[in-house]
Amino acid sequence: MGNKLLDFFDKADKVGGLPAKIRLAVLSKSSSSNAKSMEDSIENIRNMQNSFDIVSKEFEKKEGNSLSKATTKDTINSLRKYISAFSDMFLFQAEDHNLKTSAQQITVKIAESINVNRASIWLYNEDKSGVVCLNLYQQDKKTHSEGAILSKVDFPNYFKILETNRTLAADDAHTHFGTAEFSEVYLKPNGITSMLDVPIFAKGEMVGLICHEHTGPKREWNSDEENFAHLMSSILGNILKHRT
Image 1 (cartoon, rainbow, N blue to C red):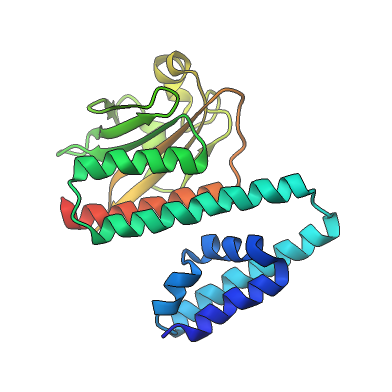
Image 2 (image 1 turned 30 degrees about the vertical axis):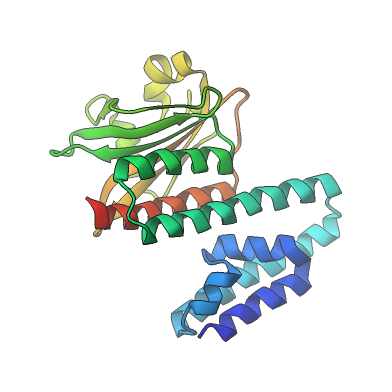
């Protein structure tokens, strides 16, 4: 099986220990345990090699810059949360959960992993004129809600970006081209300052989106967070493909 793929995790360990191994898992979208069962195909090896090359370069720079222990610890903790979320999502694929129940569990996992106050899943309505909230989890209140509707007519720039890009990362959601439309009617009332949204695809077409909403001081989204969001949307798309 994936002996060659697993070798890359050993190489990463030599390059930067646990942080490098976790970073490799995030970039390759596969944990070391998953690599064991994967086929050593040309495509899988190429993907793992490309991911390892990035990790190798990043950790060479980190050694030269002498990152503080606190920074390294924060990075490790964040990446560990991502790996945990990936593992849980794979379980959701294998188990026969009710879609509504799954959505509640997934939004909690997303909010906790990427550390946002609000995480939500939205699916297109029948005529694709807008999206309906399947579940929105608010972490500070530990509450779930559903049923809100976002119309394409009301937020054209937002939908245009999501339908043509892998992610929409708005550090300042009030001024970003894709999210400024929400400023008065949604962002300000809910105290949202930054947004990271990703489309969900199933059977080759966009079926909805995942929304990460940060409250408090503006937040600059990094590449790990964007990769995490994109991967979670891919896994969720696969779940929806079999349950809708």
